[in-house]
Image 1 (cartoon, helix red, strand yellow):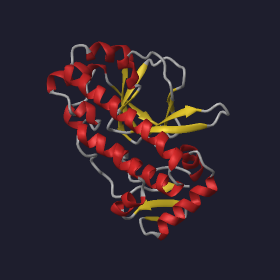
Image 2: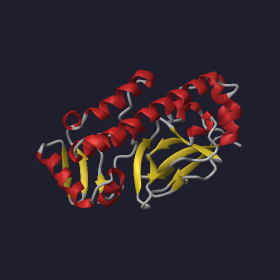
Image 3: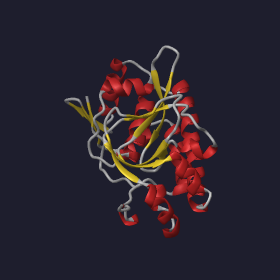
Image 4: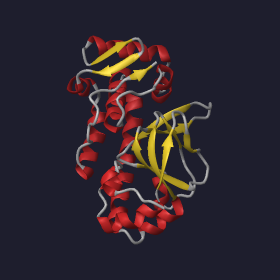
Length: 248
């Protein structure tokens, strides 16, 4: 069996491991391709495997009593889907669904828990990530309750841009509406407002970020609250693409 060379790994947690700890993890990693709409974990199901995301991004969704999903967090190459197993969880609280195509390294959850006991740097990185993800979930809840849609859409696009390693995202307006818990028509209005402000270009169903700084100014403080906490623990997101395109 061939193992991924550390220099080729894009997941920021794996890439930050010292060589001796990466050598403990690498034999248990299997490269997999992720497809748009693929569910990695269903709410209530046993977490048998975890995913170190390499490209694209994943939504963590909570299912409401009426059957509608609502996004509570995003997972990209900065993190891992299924990380709650290191805290002792055995089942998934949320559904994790791929919002773009991409790639990841899959690893059996039981092996991750075993490796962590002998890899202090990995354990530290995973616990830091759990904290940052918790901050993201808490801030998203506050944002959904108190901020207007234009600010929330700007925050969401910035978060998607931070985590995406692909230049084009296959995200419909219907899907964005579900993620933000609003109607599709209101997404169109909010996107139009951001376009008039000159921070995005919206044409023929494509949304492209044209002014990253301007979009940050259009977002509420919730974006910086999460991004700032991430910077404190991990450093800046590596922005590998110029903009985000959302295809409707």
